[in-house]
Image (cartoon, rainbow over all chains, first blue to last red; front, side):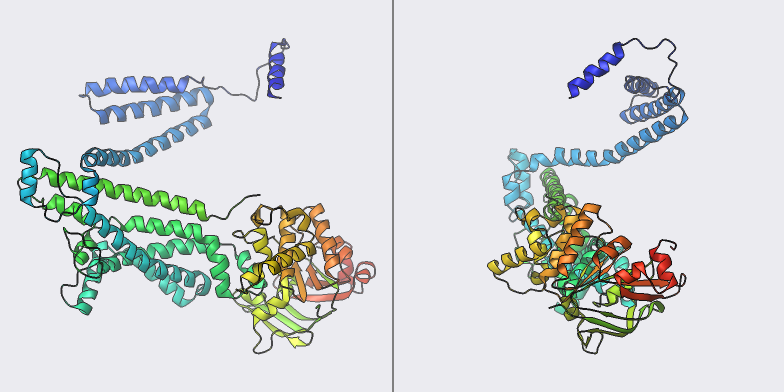
Length: 380
Length: 259
């Protein structure tokens, strides 16, 4: 089929065109395919030249090249293809430029963390705590040039446990709130008040949430009430508004027709919500929750004031202090284990940072996977 | 199984706004009744009051009585859920549950209510309902596939199968063919003709040929102007409405000189 069309096409091109054939009045000029790459190449050369004049630097080189390319490509397109296409080209390249600009910090962070974190990332780091690792140990490590001892296992478990408990607290509260807002409250005074306070909660600084949890449990349990669950409560204060918001949005986009279809079958409202509305929205809700977890997993300040800091493994969130990865990083950097030889501490901090980023990335991927897994299937 | 509906002086409101005024109508069991009229005349609103779906809309309320075989649907202590399980409804746009397979869609009325049903009973009910909706032969090999994968006409017949699976006395249809092509429409119309052997069917339609083809009796609704409530103008045998209407407004509408 396609072979036939090609042969037909070649036939038409080989046929002699009528001599009186005029230029197509519908067509406009078009830049040849090589023009834009050529302009890009020229801009890079000119940018390099311009940058060398003022003392070569990568930043000035990139900026000069980009500006020269933007102007040259827009002007060339305007001259050859017309004003409208010229404007289109300007905005297209501007948007590309801002996209690259936005990517630079991300790429830079990833590169730095990988570069500095990878050397410290090994099985020993992942599966041992800082228990017994003192300044003397670090000093000896540096003197003998042996591998760095001590790891972040206690902080990793702390992060997982505290985040898990924060999720256990916030998901039911947040989801039920959203269900009330969308399905029952409609636009009544209580629903509007809740929406307002959820908005206010979104803006609470994390340290305030931490102080709230610390003070609250301090009142109930007296002094020395620092433990994992208090940190989980602090984090859930930060998580609940996110969960409410994302669940609310997801419930709102469930078509009303599905609710009516269910009511028309003689199904009660709570069963309709439980069996029709939530399953339809579950993929969005689940990925929203996962993103809310990713949002709080890196909190430092509220953990410091609620769970304290520990160097040993503590798997019980209801007693004793706990470390999480962010607080572990903070302490390794601010108060190195050995004040005279800070390198082992810094290496541990970067490795923990890499671990934390990997966890957040995994959560984001999980969110996508969950959304795909739970999405209503479209098979035929 | 099929029951009669008698409506006495029914007024339907959206908050303060009176959408339908003073409707009285008697709908015979095992018959097809069509509601026709211009857009916004309140025929769909009125239809929704017949199984208490109107009050799902915020501010929706009703005055008057609707009797199902003599029992008032709006009497004190009547649970709307009971009413809706006896009076089923098919909507304008096909709306199968996207999370459920074809089979689960048919069983939705049973399963969503948490009733236990044995596998053999469930299979029998699915086959009976899908056969009743003229869909069995088209989907019997893919009962476990999602209902949203069917064509629009098939989805609408799936919704009808879902409705008859809960064994209602009355089936209300709100413009069931308006989103469908002529062939699917024909399939649904054939189905309506079969359904009236077992059920009382009430159908709202914009298509007058459809009303003439499928219904035994036809009710014409009209409004005096925007912001005015809709009224029942004329209710009679379909043949009479289309060939020899009593009211001038009905004649103008069915002959196409209006709206």
